[in-house]
Image 1 (tube, helix red, strand yellow):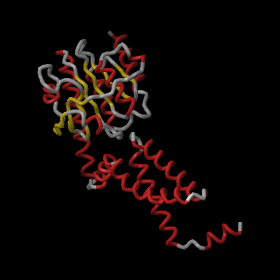
Image 2 (image 1 turned 90 degrees about the horizontal axis):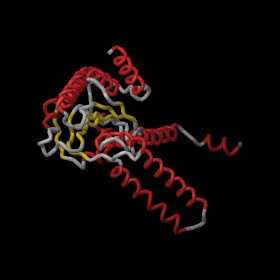
Image 3 (image 1 turned 120 degrees about the vertical axis):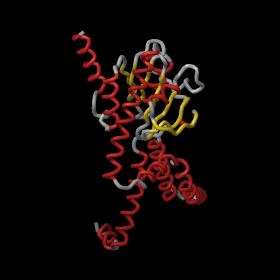
Image 4 (image 1 turned 90 degrees about the vertical axis):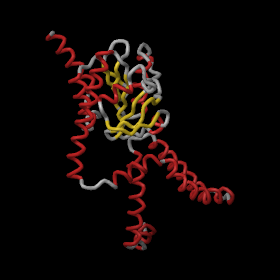
Length: 277
């Protein structure tokens, strides 16, 4: 107890500020990685570094201690490289100013995006043109974007219909939407290995697969039947009309899907419509 009191007596306000700054850095690192595939990597790196540091202090191995001391600076240099997508997106958020003005503009952009995607899906469903539209959320999809063709264009129904027209070079694979813009087309997605969905087509299994690895939402239009489906969190809801699709997209952009059993609600709406018919 005496030793603890002695240590506390040696701490002044500069040490407290120093501890708070270090804590803030680690908090920001974990906040940037939260909800992304990088969070597991960051936790693993922190655990390995902590264990190695403790062992280097306890064990009387000079060579091992030297290796740890010289490896830590290299690790600090590697962090910005490994987490480059997350750091870039965090800096972009910091650079956005004028919250009250941009919030209204973002709301208008979201409503426009929802309307354009719903229109495109409805028209493609009518003519049975297959489509796969992925909406990125917090989990970065850069690794899938890099497999496709970069576009960087506004979300427009006509553009989506053109991309997914069977006679175009980009119609196969997926379109990825980020921040209300079409980032890339012809992107390759991982197919789900869940045997529950083994009977579904390639598009639907790819839609489920990417939602198993991220918090993205995917709109699928079947080329064979024209049925509109939505995949999220490793689950898929099928046979949606344009109004149900707009409702799901609105909830997604408002970040409410996480705590909302949207599959059950849509299934209840579909059962209600069937009963009325």
